[in-house]
Image: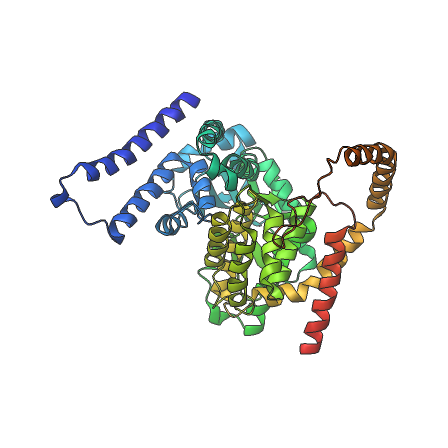
Length: 504
Protein backbone atom coordinates (compact mmCIF):
# COMPACT_ATOMS: atom_id res chain seq x y z
CA UNK A 1 0.00 0.00 0.00
CA UNK A 2 2.79 2.44 0.93
CA UNK A 3 4.69 1.83 -2.33
CA UNK A 4 1.49 2.20 -4.34
CA UNK A 5 0.66 5.54 -2.69
CA UNK A 6 4.23 6.75 -3.20
CA UNK A 7 4.03 5.91 -6.92
CA UNK A 8 0.66 7.66 -7.20
CA UNK A 9 2.01 10.76 -5.46
CA UNK A 10 5.08 10.74 -7.72
CA UNK A 11 2.89 10.46 -10.83
CA UNK A 12 0.62 13.35 -9.81
CA UNK A 13 3.58 15.55 -8.89
CA UNK A 14 5.22 14.67 -12.21
CA UNK A 15 2.06 15.79 -14.04
CA UNK A 16 2.10 19.10 -12.20
CA UNK A 17 5.80 19.56 -12.89
CA UNK A 18 5.25 18.62 -16.53
CA UNK A 19 2.62 21.31 -16.94
CA UNK A 20 4.98 23.90 -15.49
CA UNK A 21 7.87 22.67 -17.64
CA UNK A 22 5.75 22.73 -20.80
CA UNK A 23 5.03 26.39 -20.20
CA UNK A 24 8.66 27.20 -19.42
CA UNK A 25 10.05 25.43 -22.50
CA UNK A 26 7.76 27.21 -24.94
CA UNK A 27 9.40 29.91 -27.05
CA UNK A 28 8.93 33.28 -25.38
CA UNK A 29 6.75 34.53 -28.18
CA UNK A 30 4.33 31.63 -27.80
CA UNK A 31 4.05 31.64 -24.00
CA UNK A 32 0.70 32.78 -22.60
CA UNK A 33 1.05 35.91 -20.46
CA UNK A 34 1.92 35.22 -16.80
CA UNK A 35 -1.00 37.21 -15.49
CA UNK A 36 -3.75 36.41 -13.04
CA UNK A 37 -5.31 33.77 -15.31
CA UNK A 38 -2.05 31.75 -15.40
CA UNK A 39 -1.79 31.80 -11.60
CA UNK A 40 -5.40 30.73 -11.30
CA UNK A 41 -4.83 27.82 -13.70
CA UNK A 42 -1.84 26.70 -11.65
CA UNK A 43 -3.92 26.90 -8.46
CA UNK A 44 -6.76 24.94 -10.04
CA UNK A 45 -4.38 22.21 -11.22
CA UNK A 46 -2.95 21.93 -7.72
CA UNK A 47 -6.41 21.68 -6.17
CA UNK A 48 -7.44 19.02 -8.70
CA UNK A 49 -4.23 17.11 -7.92
CA UNK A 50 -5.08 17.10 -4.19
CA UNK A 51 -8.59 15.84 -4.96
CA UNK A 52 -7.20 13.04 -7.11
CA UNK A 53 -4.86 11.94 -4.31
CA UNK A 54 -7.72 11.37 -1.90
CA UNK A 55 -8.95 12.15 1.63
CA UNK A 56 -5.73 12.98 3.43
CA UNK A 57 -4.60 15.47 0.80
CA UNK A 58 -8.04 17.07 0.71
CA UNK A 59 -7.88 17.60 4.49
CA UNK A 60 -4.29 18.86 4.23
CA UNK A 61 -5.38 21.32 1.54
CA UNK A 62 -8.20 22.56 3.76
CA UNK A 63 -5.64 23.21 6.50
CA UNK A 64 -3.33 24.99 4.06
CA UNK A 65 -6.21 27.29 3.16
CA UNK A 66 -5.82 28.76 6.67
CA UNK A 67 -2.05 29.35 6.31
CA UNK A 68 -1.65 32.35 3.99
CA UNK A 69 1.82 32.96 5.38
CA UNK A 70 3.19 30.34 2.99
CA UNK A 71 0.34 29.66 0.52
CA UNK A 72 -0.38 32.35 -2.13
CA UNK A 73 -3.87 33.93 -2.31
CA UNK A 74 -4.93 32.17 -5.52
CA UNK A 75 -4.07 28.78 -3.96
CA UNK A 76 -6.08 29.63 -0.84
CA UNK A 77 -9.12 30.50 -2.96
CA UNK A 78 -8.91 27.08 -4.66
CA UNK A 79 -8.11 25.15 -1.47
CA UNK A 80 -11.21 26.64 0.18
CA UNK A 81 -13.23 24.67 -2.37
CA UNK A 82 -11.88 21.40 -0.94
CA UNK A 83 -14.93 20.57 1.14
CA UNK A 84 -15.14 16.97 0.05
CA UNK A 85 -17.40 17.71 -2.94
CA UNK A 86 -16.60 14.38 -4.55
CA UNK A 87 -18.69 12.46 -7.04
CA UNK A 88 -20.98 9.81 -5.49
CA UNK A 89 -19.96 6.18 -5.80
CA UNK A 90 -22.59 3.46 -6.44
CA UNK A 91 -24.14 1.83 -3.37
CA UNK A 92 -22.74 -1.52 -4.51
CA UNK A 93 -19.31 -0.24 -3.43
CA UNK A 94 -20.60 0.26 0.12
CA UNK A 95 -22.86 -2.76 0.61
CA UNK A 96 -19.91 -5.10 1.42
CA UNK A 97 -18.93 -2.72 4.24
CA UNK A 98 -22.46 -2.92 5.68
CA UNK A 99 -22.34 -6.73 5.54
CA UNK A 100 -18.97 -6.87 7.28
CA UNK A 101 -19.92 -4.37 9.99
CA UNK A 102 -23.60 -5.13 10.63
CA UNK A 103 -23.85 -8.71 9.40
CA UNK A 104 -25.38 -10.32 6.28
CA UNK A 105 -28.89 -9.38 7.46
CA UNK A 106 -28.03 -5.70 7.79
CA UNK A 107 -31.07 -4.67 5.71
CA UNK A 108 -33.43 -6.01 8.40
CA UNK A 109 -32.28 -3.20 10.70
CA UNK A 110 -34.07 -0.71 8.45
CA UNK A 111 -37.55 -0.63 7.01
CA UNK A 112 -36.25 1.51 4.16
CA UNK A 113 -32.94 2.92 2.91
CA UNK A 114 -32.57 5.24 -0.08
CA UNK A 115 -29.59 3.73 -1.89
CA UNK A 116 -30.16 5.68 -5.11
CA UNK A 117 -29.54 9.20 -3.78
CA UNK A 118 -26.93 9.63 -1.03
CA UNK A 119 -27.53 12.50 1.37
CA UNK A 120 -23.86 13.38 1.30
CA UNK A 121 -20.68 12.33 -0.46
CA UNK A 122 -17.25 12.92 1.06
CA UNK A 123 -13.75 11.67 0.54
CA UNK A 124 -14.00 9.30 3.51
CA UNK A 125 -17.63 8.20 3.46
CA UNK A 126 -21.09 8.43 1.94
CA UNK A 127 -24.31 9.05 3.86
CA UNK A 128 -27.74 7.56 3.09
CA UNK A 129 -31.22 8.32 4.41
CA UNK A 130 -32.94 5.38 6.13
CA UNK A 131 -35.89 4.59 8.39
CA UNK A 132 -35.81 2.41 11.51
CA UNK A 133 -38.58 -0.07 12.39
CA UNK A 134 -39.89 2.39 15.01
CA UNK A 135 -40.35 5.05 12.30
CA UNK A 136 -37.36 7.24 13.17
CA UNK A 137 -35.56 8.87 10.25
CA UNK A 138 -31.81 8.28 10.43
CA UNK A 139 -28.63 8.93 8.48
CA UNK A 140 -26.37 5.94 7.75
CA UNK A 141 -22.74 6.91 7.29
CA UNK A 142 -20.58 4.26 5.55
CA UNK A 143 -16.82 4.48 5.18
CA UNK A 144 -15.37 4.09 1.71
CA UNK A 145 -13.72 0.68 1.23
CA UNK A 146 -9.94 0.75 1.71
CA UNK A 147 -9.85 4.41 2.69
CA UNK A 148 -8.39 3.80 6.15
CA UNK A 149 -5.36 1.98 4.79
CA UNK A 150 -4.70 4.59 2.09
CA UNK A 151 -4.91 7.49 4.57
CA UNK A 152 -2.55 5.80 7.01
CA UNK A 153 -0.08 5.15 4.18
CA UNK A 154 -0.35 8.82 3.16
CA UNK A 155 0.32 9.97 6.71
CA UNK A 156 3.48 7.90 6.91
CA UNK A 157 4.72 9.08 3.51
CA UNK A 158 4.03 12.78 4.10
CA UNK A 159 5.65 12.71 7.54
CA UNK A 160 8.84 11.37 5.92
CA UNK A 161 8.75 14.09 3.27
CA UNK A 162 8.20 16.77 5.93
CA UNK A 163 11.26 15.61 7.87
CA UNK A 164 13.32 15.62 4.68
CA UNK A 165 12.21 19.15 3.82
CA UNK A 166 12.74 20.52 7.35
CA UNK A 167 16.41 19.52 7.28
CA UNK A 168 16.96 21.48 4.07
CA UNK A 169 14.93 24.61 4.88
CA UNK A 170 15.91 25.42 8.45
CA UNK A 171 14.97 29.10 8.38
CA UNK A 172 11.53 28.25 6.99
CA UNK A 173 11.16 25.54 9.63
CA UNK A 174 12.04 28.08 12.33
CA UNK A 175 8.67 29.79 11.91
CA UNK A 176 6.55 27.04 10.32
CA UNK A 177 7.03 23.59 11.85
CA UNK A 178 5.53 21.49 9.05
CA UNK A 179 5.95 18.18 10.88
CA UNK A 180 4.23 19.50 14.01
CA UNK A 181 1.40 20.98 11.95
CA UNK A 182 0.95 17.65 10.18
CA UNK A 183 0.81 15.98 13.60
CA UNK A 184 -2.13 18.22 14.49
CA UNK A 185 -3.87 17.25 11.25
CA UNK A 186 -3.22 13.54 11.90
CA UNK A 187 -4.60 13.72 15.44
CA UNK A 188 -7.72 15.53 14.25
CA UNK A 189 -8.31 13.09 11.38
CA UNK A 190 -7.94 9.80 13.26
CA UNK A 191 -11.53 9.78 14.64
CA UNK A 192 -12.74 10.18 11.06
CA UNK A 193 -11.20 6.78 10.32
CA UNK A 194 -12.95 5.10 13.27
CA UNK A 195 -16.66 5.82 13.65
CA UNK A 196 -16.67 4.49 17.23
CA UNK A 197 -14.41 7.42 18.15
CA UNK A 198 -16.60 9.81 16.17
CA UNK A 199 -19.65 8.51 18.06
CA UNK A 200 -17.83 9.18 21.34
CA UNK A 201 -17.12 12.75 20.17
CA UNK A 202 -20.81 13.20 19.35
CA UNK A 203 -21.90 12.00 22.78
CA UNK A 204 -19.51 14.45 24.48
CA UNK A 205 -20.70 17.27 22.23
CA UNK A 206 -24.37 16.45 22.89
CA UNK A 207 -23.76 16.77 26.62
CA UNK A 208 -22.01 20.12 26.12
CA UNK A 209 -24.90 21.35 23.94
CA UNK A 210 -27.46 20.82 26.73
CA UNK A 211 -26.72 24.31 28.04
CA UNK A 212 -27.78 25.97 24.77
CA UNK A 213 -31.38 26.41 23.60
CA UNK A 214 -30.49 26.70 19.92
CA UNK A 215 -27.81 23.99 19.51
CA UNK A 216 -28.34 20.27 18.92
CA UNK A 217 -26.11 17.29 18.09
CA UNK A 218 -27.44 14.13 16.37
CA UNK A 219 -28.16 11.11 18.57
CA UNK A 220 -25.95 8.07 18.02
CA UNK A 221 -28.12 5.01 17.27
CA UNK A 222 -25.34 2.54 16.48
CA UNK A 223 -21.64 2.75 15.74
CA UNK A 224 -19.00 0.36 14.45
CA UNK A 225 -15.58 1.12 13.08
CA UNK A 226 -16.90 1.83 9.58
CA UNK A 227 -20.66 2.37 9.94
CA UNK A 228 -22.41 5.08 11.96
CA UNK A 229 -26.20 5.29 12.33
CA UNK A 230 -27.41 8.60 13.76
CA UNK A 231 -30.60 10.61 13.98
CA UNK A 232 -31.32 12.71 10.89
CA UNK A 233 -30.57 16.43 11.19
CA UNK A 234 -33.72 18.45 10.38
CA UNK A 235 -33.71 21.29 7.88
CA UNK A 236 -31.09 22.23 5.30
CA UNK A 237 -27.49 23.40 5.26
CA UNK A 238 -27.18 26.88 6.70
CA UNK A 239 -25.76 27.88 3.31
CA UNK A 240 -29.08 27.04 1.61
CA UNK A 241 -31.40 28.36 4.34
CA UNK A 242 -33.94 31.05 3.49
CA UNK A 243 -33.02 33.85 5.85
CA UNK A 244 -36.49 35.42 5.54
CA UNK A 245 -38.11 32.23 6.88
CA UNK A 246 -36.62 33.01 10.31
CA UNK A 247 -37.49 35.91 12.56
CA UNK A 248 -34.68 38.34 13.32
CA UNK A 249 -34.73 37.21 16.94
CA UNK A 250 -34.43 33.53 15.96
CA UNK A 251 -31.59 34.17 13.51
CA UNK A 252 -29.72 36.18 16.11
CA UNK A 253 -30.28 33.56 18.81
CA UNK A 254 -29.02 30.74 16.57
CA UNK A 255 -25.94 32.70 15.52
CA UNK A 256 -25.24 33.74 19.11
CA UNK A 257 -25.52 30.19 20.45
CA UNK A 258 -23.36 28.76 17.66
CA UNK A 259 -20.59 31.20 18.54
CA UNK A 260 -21.06 30.78 22.30
CA UNK A 261 -20.95 26.98 21.94
CA UNK A 262 -17.71 27.17 19.97
CA UNK A 263 -16.19 29.66 22.43
CA UNK A 264 -16.97 27.28 25.28
CA UNK A 265 -15.29 24.48 23.33
CA UNK A 266 -12.15 26.57 22.78
CA UNK A 267 -11.83 28.02 26.28
CA UNK A 268 -13.59 25.78 28.82
CA UNK A 269 -14.00 22.24 27.50
CA UNK A 270 -10.91 22.56 25.25
CA UNK A 271 -12.58 20.20 22.77
CA UNK A 272 -14.17 21.74 19.68
CA UNK A 273 -15.66 20.92 16.28
CA UNK A 274 -12.74 21.12 13.87
CA UNK A 275 -14.76 21.54 10.67
CA UNK A 276 -18.01 23.51 11.23
CA UNK A 277 -18.32 24.64 7.60
CA UNK A 278 -21.83 25.42 6.26
CA UNK A 279 -22.37 21.84 5.06
CA UNK A 280 -22.05 20.65 8.66
CA UNK A 281 -24.57 23.11 10.15
CA UNK A 282 -28.27 22.39 9.52
CA UNK A 283 -31.07 24.82 10.39
CA UNK A 284 -34.85 24.89 10.24
CA UNK A 285 -37.28 27.56 11.53
CA UNK A 286 -38.49 26.72 15.00
CA UNK A 287 -35.73 24.13 15.59
CA UNK A 288 -32.21 24.33 17.06
CA UNK A 289 -29.26 24.41 14.70
CA UNK A 290 -27.74 20.93 14.37
CA UNK A 291 -23.97 20.42 14.17
CA UNK A 292 -23.13 17.22 12.31
CA UNK A 293 -19.93 15.35 11.32
CA UNK A 294 -17.92 15.07 14.53
CA UNK A 295 -15.06 13.13 12.99
CA UNK A 296 -12.63 16.05 12.99
CA UNK A 297 -12.35 17.36 16.55
CA UNK A 298 -9.63 19.62 17.93
CA UNK A 299 -8.23 19.25 21.46
CA UNK A 300 -6.00 21.84 23.12
CA UNK A 301 -4.34 22.14 26.51
CA UNK A 302 -5.04 24.80 29.13
CA UNK A 303 -2.05 27.11 28.42
CA UNK A 304 -2.92 27.29 24.72
CA UNK A 305 -6.60 27.88 25.51
CA UNK A 306 -5.70 30.69 27.92
CA UNK A 307 -3.46 32.31 25.30
CA UNK A 308 -6.28 32.28 22.73
CA UNK A 309 -8.66 33.76 25.30
CA UNK A 310 -6.18 36.54 26.07
CA UNK A 311 -5.78 37.13 22.33
CA UNK A 312 -9.52 37.67 21.85
CA UNK A 313 -9.75 39.76 25.01
CA UNK A 314 -7.05 42.09 23.69
CA UNK A 315 -8.88 42.30 20.37
CA UNK A 316 -12.09 43.19 22.19
CA UNK A 317 -10.22 45.88 24.18
CA UNK A 318 -8.64 47.28 20.98
CA UNK A 319 -5.14 46.60 22.35
CA UNK A 320 -2.67 45.95 19.53
CA UNK A 321 0.39 45.48 21.76
CA UNK A 322 -1.51 43.05 24.00
CA UNK A 323 -2.69 41.14 20.92
CA UNK A 324 0.93 40.82 19.77
CA UNK A 325 2.05 39.50 23.18
CA UNK A 326 -0.78 36.96 23.27
CA UNK A 327 0.04 35.76 19.73
CA UNK A 328 3.71 35.31 20.60
CA UNK A 329 2.72 33.43 23.76
CA UNK A 330 0.69 31.02 21.60
CA UNK A 331 3.85 30.17 19.69
CA UNK A 332 7.46 31.13 20.37
CA UNK A 333 10.21 33.46 19.27
CA UNK A 334 13.22 32.68 17.09
CA UNK A 335 16.76 34.04 16.97
CA UNK A 336 15.62 36.61 14.39
CA UNK A 337 12.29 37.67 15.94
CA UNK A 338 11.40 41.35 15.67
CA UNK A 339 8.78 41.59 18.38
CA UNK A 340 8.55 45.38 18.50
CA UNK A 341 7.85 45.54 14.77
CA UNK A 342 5.15 42.89 15.14
CA UNK A 343 3.56 44.90 17.97
CA UNK A 344 3.47 47.88 15.61
CA UNK A 345 1.80 45.75 12.94
CA UNK A 346 -0.89 44.68 15.40
CA UNK A 347 -1.43 48.23 16.64
CA UNK A 348 -2.33 49.17 13.07
CA UNK A 349 -4.48 46.09 12.41
CA UNK A 350 -6.47 45.61 15.63
CA UNK A 351 -8.55 48.84 15.46
CA UNK A 352 -9.99 47.58 12.16
CA UNK A 353 -11.24 44.39 13.86
CA UNK A 354 -12.44 45.45 17.29
CA UNK A 355 -15.88 46.81 16.30
CA UNK A 356 -16.58 44.90 13.08
CA UNK A 357 -19.64 42.75 12.44
CA UNK A 358 -19.59 39.61 10.32
CA UNK A 359 -20.75 41.73 7.38
CA UNK A 360 -17.62 43.86 7.78
CA UNK A 361 -15.13 41.28 9.06
CA UNK A 362 -13.71 38.29 7.22
CA UNK A 363 -11.80 36.16 9.71
CA UNK A 364 -9.86 34.52 6.90
CA UNK A 365 -8.57 37.92 5.76
CA UNK A 366 -7.77 38.88 9.36
CA UNK A 367 -5.90 35.64 10.01
CA UNK A 368 -4.06 36.16 6.73
CA UNK A 369 -2.79 39.53 7.90
CA UNK A 370 -1.73 38.30 11.36
CA UNK A 371 0.04 35.22 10.00
CA UNK A 372 1.85 37.17 7.31
CA UNK A 373 3.04 39.75 9.82
CA UNK A 374 4.12 37.17 12.40
CA UNK A 375 6.01 35.02 9.88
CA UNK A 376 7.76 38.03 8.38
CA UNK A 377 8.78 39.15 11.88
CA UNK A 378 10.32 35.76 12.72
CA UNK A 379 7.66 34.45 15.12
CA UNK A 380 7.04 30.70 15.16
CA UNK A 381 3.32 30.05 15.02
CA UNK A 382 1.80 27.26 17.07
CA UNK A 383 0.89 24.27 14.87
CA UNK A 384 -2.56 24.30 16.52
CA UNK A 385 -3.31 27.51 14.60
CA UNK A 386 -3.98 25.34 11.54
CA UNK A 387 -7.01 23.59 13.01
CA UNK A 388 -8.06 26.50 15.25
CA UNK A 389 -7.99 28.87 12.31
CA UNK A 390 -9.93 26.42 10.16
CA UNK A 391 -12.54 25.91 12.89
CA UNK A 392 -12.96 29.60 13.68
CA UNK A 393 -13.07 30.69 10.04
CA UNK A 394 -15.62 27.98 9.21
CA UNK A 395 -18.02 28.82 12.04
CA UNK A 396 -17.76 32.49 11.14
CA UNK A 397 -18.54 31.70 7.50
CA UNK A 398 -21.46 29.47 8.50
CA UNK A 399 -23.07 32.10 10.72
CA UNK A 400 -22.59 34.77 8.07
CA UNK A 401 -25.12 32.97 5.86
CA UNK A 402 -27.87 33.34 8.48
CA UNK A 403 -26.94 36.30 10.66
CA UNK A 404 -24.28 38.52 9.03
CA UNK A 405 -25.01 41.45 11.34
CA UNK A 406 -23.75 39.51 14.38
CA UNK A 407 -20.46 40.67 15.94
CA UNK A 408 -17.89 38.08 17.01
CA UNK A 409 -16.48 40.45 19.61
CA UNK A 410 -19.91 41.36 21.05
CA UNK A 411 -20.78 37.70 21.58
CA UNK A 412 -17.34 37.09 23.06
CA UNK A 413 -17.85 40.01 25.45
CA UNK A 414 -21.21 38.66 26.58
CA UNK A 415 -19.78 35.19 27.22
CA UNK A 416 -16.52 36.33 28.80
CA UNK A 417 -17.59 36.55 32.44
CA UNK A 418 -19.14 33.06 32.36
CA UNK A 419 -16.02 31.63 30.72
CA UNK A 420 -13.65 33.22 33.24
CA UNK A 421 -15.88 32.14 36.12
CA UNK A 422 -15.60 28.52 34.96
CA UNK A 423 -11.83 28.88 34.60
CA UNK A 424 -11.47 30.26 38.12
CA UNK A 425 -13.60 27.43 39.51
CA UNK A 426 -11.35 24.97 37.70
CA UNK A 427 -8.23 26.64 39.11
CA UNK A 428 -9.68 26.43 42.65
CA UNK A 429 -10.82 22.81 42.35
CA UNK A 430 -9.59 20.15 44.81
CA UNK A 431 -7.50 18.51 42.08
CA UNK A 432 -5.78 21.80 41.34
CA UNK A 433 -5.18 22.40 45.06
CA UNK A 434 -3.49 18.98 45.35
CA UNK A 435 -1.31 19.70 42.31
CA UNK A 436 -0.32 23.12 43.65
CA UNK A 437 0.60 21.57 47.01
CA UNK A 438 2.74 18.94 45.29
CA UNK A 439 4.48 21.60 43.21
CA UNK A 440 5.22 23.63 46.36
CA UNK A 441 6.64 20.54 48.07
CA UNK A 442 8.79 19.79 45.02
CA UNK A 443 9.94 23.41 44.80
CA UNK A 444 10.75 23.43 48.52
CA UNK A 445 12.83 20.27 48.22
CA UNK A 446 14.73 21.72 45.26
CA UNK A 447 15.26 25.18 46.79
CA UNK A 448 18.51 24.46 48.71
CA UNK A 449 20.12 22.97 45.61
CA UNK A 450 18.95 25.89 43.48
CA UNK A 451 20.26 28.36 46.06
CA UNK A 452 23.65 26.67 46.06
CA UNK A 453 23.67 26.88 42.25
CA UNK A 454 22.88 30.60 42.29
CA UNK A 455 25.57 31.22 44.93
CA UNK A 456 28.10 29.33 42.80
CA UNK A 457 27.12 31.36 39.72
CA UNK A 458 27.54 34.60 41.66
CA UNK A 459 30.95 33.57 42.94
CA UNK A 460 31.96 32.70 39.38
CA UNK A 461 30.33 35.88 38.04
CA UNK A 462 28.38 33.66 35.67
CA UNK A 463 24.80 34.71 36.52
CA UNK A 464 22.74 35.81 33.52
CA UNK A 465 19.42 37.61 33.82
CA UNK A 466 16.48 36.80 31.59
CA UNK A 467 14.93 40.07 30.48
CA UNK A 468 11.74 40.92 28.63
CA UNK A 469 12.81 42.02 25.19
CA UNK A 470 11.10 44.82 23.23
CA UNK A 471 8.15 44.73 25.56
CA UNK A 472 7.35 41.08 24.89
CA UNK A 473 7.09 38.21 27.29
CA UNK A 474 9.56 35.32 27.14
CA UNK A 475 8.15 32.42 25.13
CA UNK A 476 7.87 30.17 28.17
CA UNK A 477 4.42 29.00 29.25
CA UNK A 478 5.22 26.91 32.31
CA UNK A 479 3.09 28.76 34.88
CA UNK A 480 0.54 26.37 36.31
CA UNK A 481 -2.40 26.59 38.59
CA UNK A 482 -3.97 29.96 39.33
CA UNK A 483 -0.90 31.82 38.11
CA UNK A 484 -0.23 35.09 36.35
CA UNK A 485 -2.23 34.32 33.16
CA UNK A 486 -5.38 33.28 35.04
CA UNK A 487 -5.17 36.14 37.56
CA UNK A 488 -4.47 38.66 34.82
CA UNK A 489 -7.31 37.27 32.73
CA UNK A 490 -9.72 37.43 35.66
CA UNK A 491 -8.79 41.04 36.44
CA UNK A 492 -8.94 42.07 32.78
CA UNK A 493 -12.33 40.40 32.37
CA UNK A 494 -13.69 42.16 35.43
CA UNK A 495 -12.45 45.56 34.21
CA UNK A 496 -13.77 44.87 30.72
CA UNK A 497 -17.19 43.88 32.07
CA UNK A 498 -17.27 47.06 34.18
CA UNK A 499 -16.35 49.13 31.14
CA UNK A 500 -19.17 47.54 29.08
CA UNK A 501 -21.66 48.06 31.89
CA UNK A 502 -20.78 51.75 32.07
CA UNK A 503 -21.02 52.07 28.29
CA UNK A 504 -24.50 50.53 28.34
